[in-house]
Image 1: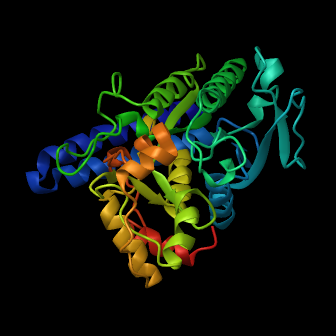
Image 2: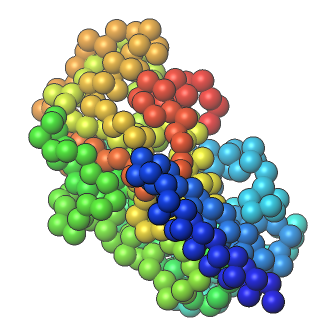
Length: 384
């Protein structure tokens, strides 16, 4: 009976919205359409929440101790509820033996990314409202004695580890969801590297999620393609979001954590020409955007998780130097980058990506840190 009433309400509301649009002036039709879309999302959320008897909104996170995972846990703690339910965070840890049950007291669960069936991978898949898949080999660290600070180019073994850690784990979780028909939000990490790394200066315009990535060049583009393909599941109740992350700015990890001490000592400067574009996002905004993705039924498929105003390396360098009150007069020549870092440096330091988050913006998400100056300040001020 509740289902019939809900369908009647949605149908009636849709007809009313369309009728209203025909009577208003063209100048406000777009606003009316967006309001209708927002209302429909709200209705969908309310209807979805009636599908589960769970007392909590259970969020499973792989890679929960990493940079993005830590920021997400902090944001979820601040938010408190999703769909009117208290949020329960469950750390999903890798193991050769998956947990067979998940009690209300458990804050972690074991899953087996090498399993071949839902029972071997994640028997408790039906307990989750959302799974945020962030685990994967760090692309910015190398193997060997200096690997922890990134002073080593990619080896064939390192590249294989980067690719396999993302593709195999995403495929495993997709398989796990085939055993349950309960609605679940599956959000898996990808990267704006999917668009290639040839955005230097004004030679190429910015791209969004509509861009064709089937033949973009570069190792990271291939990793993104394969990882996203692996997330496809036969569970029609699952909503899959491929999170194409820009560089997450935080002093707790990632690129900025390595650069800030160098800049503080006065060693900052442009990398290469400085004209390569740089798609970034603050740690706070990336966490907020993931939560928004959980709450917004219309978001699915590839979604760019990056600030709406991409900048060049030179603009980033200027912003960080200004925030730290330090000069930025020591450039890092392109030949030195290639010599020290090889393919990794040429893709991640000398290459450029100019992506914009069209889907997030159209879904109503508002960035707290839309510019590189805002994002750098947030990274230096916030403890995430």
